[in-house]
Structure formats: structure tokens, C-alpha cells
Length: 120
Image 1 (cartoon, rainbow, N blue to C red):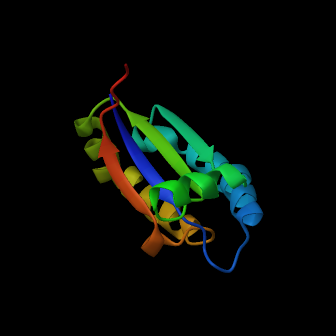
Image 2: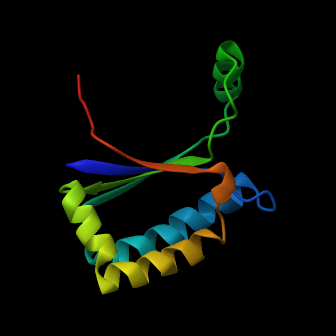
């Protein structure tokens, strides 16, 4: 099993609360209603909380500011992900998802990558 990880930064013109509202109540349900077309098995949103702990961790390690959230999407395999994304349905959905993401995500300050999960 592999995961697509997306570290998300909100658009500058919206608040974190607006970002979370849109992501959780519009984008998330839209993605889940179409997850089968992409071959996605599981989808999780990790929503950054407003906490002084975040600033403390950043400052103590001289890190960049936190992302507004992290999306994780599970797939059976890299092949399953590529098959889902390259199918006509997957390509159409990918374009629709990208358009929807523009409503709340600043892609120039976000990141996406594929990972293997290792548990200890």
C-alpha cells in the first residue's frame, strides 16, 4: 500500500477557518464521492489547529511555518494509482479536483509526494 501526501497551504485571501470549512465540508465530500474512479482506498484530512505549540515547535527548531493541513490518500499500489489517474474517468476527475482545490489551496506554497508508510 502507498499513500499520496499533500501538505496544504491556504490561499492568502481566506482565513484558516474558511480553509477548513471548505476543505472538510465541500472538497472532502466531493473527493470521497469520486474516490473509486481514482482507485483511492482511504482519505484522511489532518487539519492544523491554532495553538501556541505550533509556533513554539517552529521557533525552537528554526523551521518554516506549519502547513494548514495534510491530506493522505491510500492506494493499493503505485500501479493502482497510475491506472486510476490515467483512466478517462481519473483524468476527468483529476481536472475537476484541481479546479476545486483552487478555491482554497495555494499550490505554489503546497507540496505533494508519494510515500510508503513504515510503522514502529
